[in-house]
Length: 80
Image (cartoon, rainbow, N blue to C red; front, top):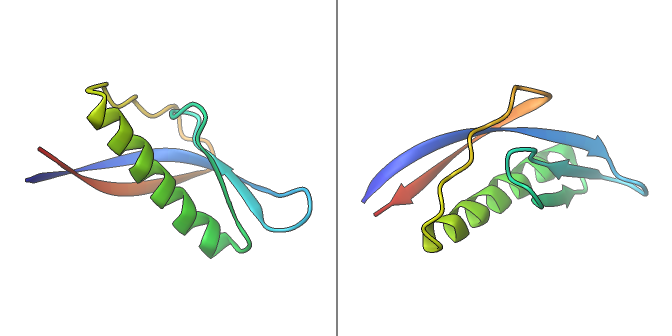
């Protein structure tokens, strides 16, 4: 299996109570959170991997990233 790397811009914002909420503009509906910045970054990587896996299963293309906003997260995905 080949591995392809993707980089997506993510937006990390303070949560209403505590912690951080993370979204990814290129991947509509992707929202996750973490109690710390470190946890939020780990959670968004996991969420992006799951999102890309669903796209692959549905044979849908991976969206292109939007213009850089706050922070980029890189994930490596195995493709058949």
